[in-house]
Length: 325
Image (cartoon, rainbow, N blue to C red; front, side):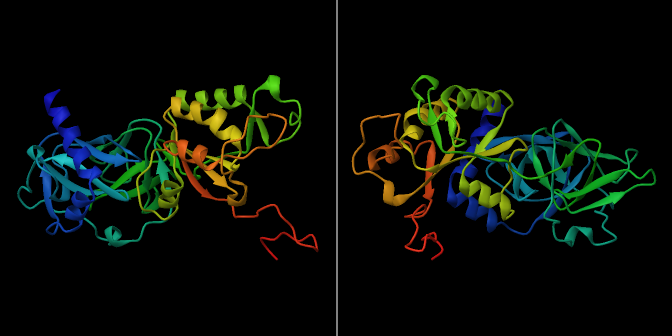
C-alpha cells in the first residue's frame, strides 16, 4: 500500500503542474529498455490518473525520464508511467521489429474502446507472444486494421514506440461520444404550462438519467475535453458523455445543478447572453426565467459557461434570424 500511495502521489504531481508537463516535453531522447517482470502502467485518463494495464516481462519499450522513480513512454495521445525498478537495459541482440515502417505511420483518426481487460499481442495472431494488457473503459488510437488468415480483424496500435495488436473480439471501434442536450427542468407538480413541450424534462426523469450514468461508470466531459477528443489531444475513458443545457434557464441552477454536483458530474450551459439577469428573479415555474450573473457564478464548479449567441432567437423585420441576417 505505501508503494501504491507513492505512485499515485508522484503521478498526480506530474499531471497537476504545467511545469512537470514541460519537463516531459523537454526530456532527453527516448531509449529502449525492457521490463524485468510484469509491470503496472499508469496514465491520466480524463481528469484521473489510473492504472491502465500492464506490460509482460521482457517487453521492449522506448522510455524517457519521468518524475521521481518513474519512467515515461508514449501512450495513446499522452504519456504513461512505469516504475523504473521494473526496467533494465535490453539484453543481448533483441530489437524492436518494424519491417514495414508502421511505427511512423500517422494515426487513423479512429479509436478502439475496451469494455474489459483486453489482451495485447506482439503480432496479429492469438498465438503470438503476449505483450501485456489494457484495462477496461479506455479509448485508444488505432494505427491501422489488419485481417488474419481466418478473416479476423486486428487493431494495430502504438505503445511505448512499439507495435501491439488487439483482436476485434476483445475490443470494438469507437463510434463517438454522446452529447445529451437539455433545456428546461421542472417538477411534475409545478409543470402546468410546459408539460407537452419536448424541451422540458421532469426533475424525476433527469435524476433517473443521471443515476443511470453514474451507476454505469460514465465520466462527464467538459467542452474543452470534447474538443481535445476531436483534435486527438488527450486520452479519455470509453464510457464518456457530454451534458449540455441550452439558453441559460433558471431551472438549471435550481434543479439540475444540485443533482449534477451530488454525482460529481460536469456540464455546460450554452447561455444567451442578452437574457442574463442583473439579479435573481423570484421563482415562477409558469414562465421561462433566465439565470442572473450571481446564479451563473454559483454553478461554475459544475458548469462551464459557453456562448449561445447574444440574440439567438430574435428575427429581423423580414422574419429572418438575426444570427444569419
